[in-house]
Length: 170
Image 1 (spheres, rainbow, N blue to C red):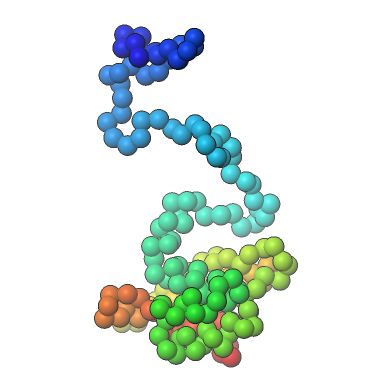
Image 2 (cartoon, helix red, strand yellow):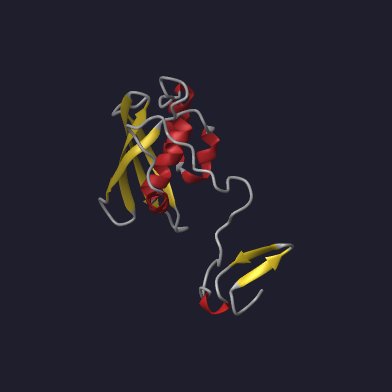
């Protein structure tokens, strides 16, 4: 690299680059320009009614116990994951409720191809270490309610202790 002009020669081509004294101090110094997906835009959604949450919003949501559990309950109740996938995250009664609901796949999308999604999830904390959460689930053209209770156990993990769907119990 020629330090005075900030360029380098590769073969017979001269490529201009940043002068040596102007490099950033942390992180990556150059954007990725090769490899799969480089220079291509992400696929566009055809369903404009419900856009994907922004990546930063999705990451913030994932850190909240209520969204984490709502997503996993949705995957189980839509038939995309087996019930035993939630075994370590539920207490006895909640696991039994999931096992009773899951064979019906109540959150399976009505028109095939459109996956159900958590539109919104909120919580109420009746006492320390307890979260009563409620979520709005969009499955096709239906909007369903999902309610669940989380308890902070002695091993410092949140576990689901009750699940109800659409206000009725099966």
